[in-house]
Length: 249
Ligand code: IPE
Ligand code: IPE
Ligand code: MG
Image (cartoon, rainbow, N blue to C red; front, side, top):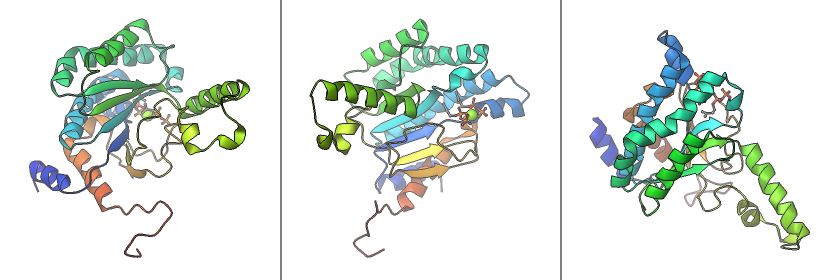
């Protein structure tokens, strides 16, 4: 079936409300071609644009893209510096398009360690798209789930000391309210490209009941067809959340 028909068919069924992608394999994509790793990061940016457009078309509410982890700072300095230029490059080129397409840009992660120019680019994109109410494009940048959970715990302990709540009042909703994006629904579908079958410190709390889709395709090779394939696979899954379906299945 042609891509257009497959997209139409996807639209006949429930699409994930929140889709998250661990965009992995840029370095290996470049290595295979005898190019420096940064060439892979540059190429990967093109797919970010395509994924955003397609997610928007499919009526997905939130697309969270894992762009840089708290552990990625351990990479060689020139690579880190290059990656930190990408938000600026991406947004300089595509911000008008995002505004036009009603996409709202957001960021999940700690801004304090980001270079000034990276922060400025993201803040401008957030400001320019703040009135938009189409797809929420959530960049996980300098994001690490353990760090998120520790910060949540620290703030909870401070609030507890202040008498904001008692220990027995803490439930899942209370805990969630201390996470970085408490208002986002949990991801329905998580994709990881490049053949690695691990989470690499990504959204450990939020992924408790998420459907996982792992593919060997490297992120810069991940086409719209691959994206649709993941959504089709999701639509065939039976989510039970520990219960049984009405038909007993
Ligand atoms: C993902 O691609 C991008 C980031 C982590 C920033 P990688 O750079 O991890 O590519 P591989 O896994 O080395 O191929
Ligand atoms: C996870 O990929 C982080 C991003 C895609 C941004 P990594 O390449 O950093 O993960 P590991 O090191 O293979 O676990
Ligand atoms: Mg990697």
